[in-house]
Every structure is written in C-alpha cells, then in structure tokens.
Length: 110
Image 1 (cartoon, rainbow, N blue to C red):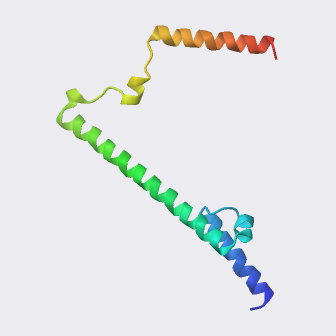
Image 2: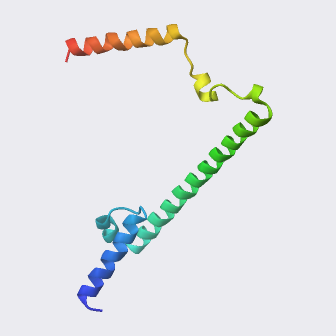
Image 3: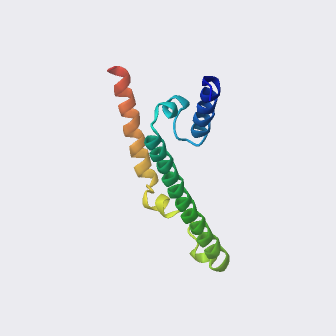
C-alpha cells in the first residue's frame, strides 16, 4: 500500500472514530490499537448507561400517566424532588435578600 492510500485510510478511520465520540481525530491517530479499543469500550459503556437511564425515565413517565388516568386524585402536583426542595415564600425572600447583600458586598470590595 502506498503512503497516500495509507494516510487516507488512517484519516478515514480517525474521522469515523471522532464521529463515534472516541476523541478528536488527532487523539485517535495517536492511540495504540489497545487504547483505541479501550476508548470504544468506554463509549459503549457510557451509551449503555444512558440507555438504562432513559428506560428508567420512560418507565417513570408511564407510571405518572397510569396514575393520572386511573387515580387522578393521587397524581402529584409537583415532582417529588421539587416538593422536597420547596421553600415557603418567606424562606425564598430571605435567600434572595442574602444574595442581594452578598452581591452588594462584592461590588464594594472587588
């Protein structure tokens, strides 16, 4: 294989790897075959984790829909996380006042 075809082939492999999220073209060209395989396996594991997360979210949405259709009185007004972190209007006012005070201090003392 002549040098021009070899460089074109390496460039194409690097471009495909970059499109798959294995790194930049330069990083891919500098990797050994073992490092390239490890990067591919890492990427596959990340995608698998993401798919599992999406499946769990889809299941949760299905649960919300089922409750909304069959027992609307049990349907939460807000998600659990929003309820757990909810503050009263007075607590929010205090937080905003502290933030405003800190902002003013930062302006006076750069």
